[in-house]
Image (cartoon, rainbow, N blue to C red):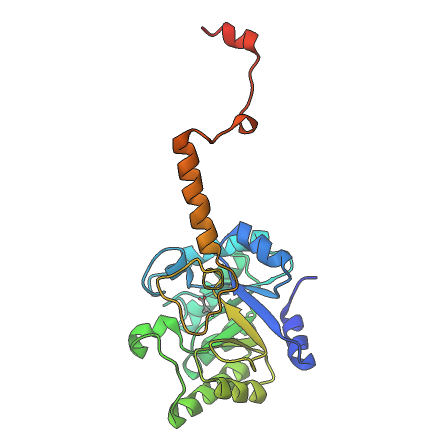
Amino acid sequence: MKNTVSTFQAAKDNGEKLTMLTCYDYSTAKIIDEAGVNSILVGDSLGNVILGYEDTVSVTMEDMIHHGAAVARGAKNCLVVIDMPFMSYQTSVYDAVVNAGRLMKEGRGNAVKLEGGVSVAPQIKAITQAGIPVVGHIGLTPQSINALGGNKVQGKSEEAAKKLIEDALAVQEAGAFAIVLEAIPAKLAALITKKLHIPTIGIGAGAECDGQVLVYQDMLGMFSDYVPKFVKKFADVGSVMKQAFTEYDKEVKEGAFPAEEHTFKINDEVLDKLY
Ligand code: KIV
């Protein structure tokens, strides 16, 4: 059954955990979908894990639409959330609505996600009023890496924790149907989760969030440039891939691949006429 904003709210109301994974392509979307995961986030983390940038700042609307549409074609039951890239919504409420609309129309998402709290509440309100479901994202917000001074845990001081609570409430008040809490202390995330009636999706925010999200290359051991403390490696697919690539290289060079069963045949009479 297709996951929707109603599925998300029902999960919160019934105390059932939600799952979300990032994804950027059709084949992987199908596998995640078949695994029964509730939601796929076409994250702007594609800047890091797909495009090899050092941060998400350079990711464009065209990147998000291109990958969003590929994922949407493979996701039957997952709720597909597409990230709004840096400077596609911060500039104005008008830009936010137009760009969220493009992610829905051209990227074929079911919802959009944007980073920030009180400061982007007008954008969240306008996008939701246009009929587009919004996921908020507070705590460590990677698009603000330059302002935050690096990938640091957020909300550790009293002042910072109060600000995060205020941001979470503003995002909810503006109409978001869920909110990602990234890299904040578990007890603060638990408190925010209790205060909100919309589901919280944690990444590095402890077990008491209503759901969890991970970057799939991280949880499959496929990306080693930077592995945050909150990542659990559920499988070492990176090593399996490397071993298979090495084997392929060896077999081709030794003449072991392709073998008889991988080749097509031609009638000898036809072949004779070619000499
Ligand atoms: O872009 C992304 O992958 C994200 C997750 C880390 C939540 O925003």
